[in-house]
Length: 237
Image 1 (cartoon, rainbow, N blue to C red):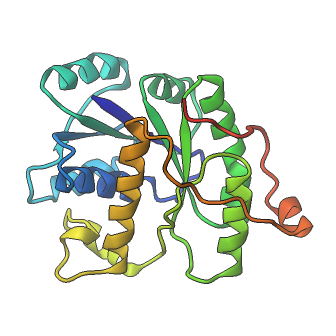
Image 2 (image 1 turned 60 degrees about the horizontal axis):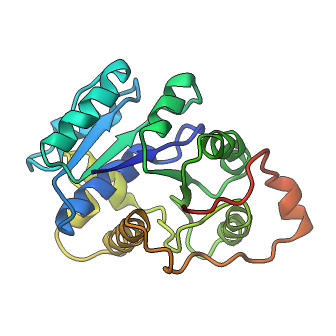
């Protein structure tokens, strides 16, 4: 069983939406059984799952103190993937979650506040020797700040080559426990989630030959504005 932690010190980065969508897409892609765990005290992922009509992915309620034991239970049950939604804070408990993970996904909105906040998360993940991948989330199409964020993130770690853009269907689908992939018709949002999961699934399975977002040149002003404290380049091991 593989364990993915969705982590970010910054609140509002879209962790819960991303966790739910990746778990559902993993099931749809045949990478299940998939389980979800919500250790964010706000319980937003739990609330979403309770409104969900579909029986998958499964949801496990657990205290942080029992997480390691329950991960083993899921593994014994034949679960193939566990996605953990973490709180927007860096505590010793978050460190314990990262230790149990095979991959840490850091969703980041293209904004100065989000980009400035990633340093501490990167530093913790690297200190624990775990691989990480940035996902540029809730981006505005064709906005200059989005391209600047790509440049900054790609030079401070591994950046997924799929950008998830800000669209209303993400929020509307989550209201009743669904995802954009489960809404009628085809959408750009659903296509982005499918491509992102395909990329992450290959990374976590050890395929190191897949493309990554290329590092782009940034202006000196952007580097100064989006200064990231701590954390260097991350190599997937």
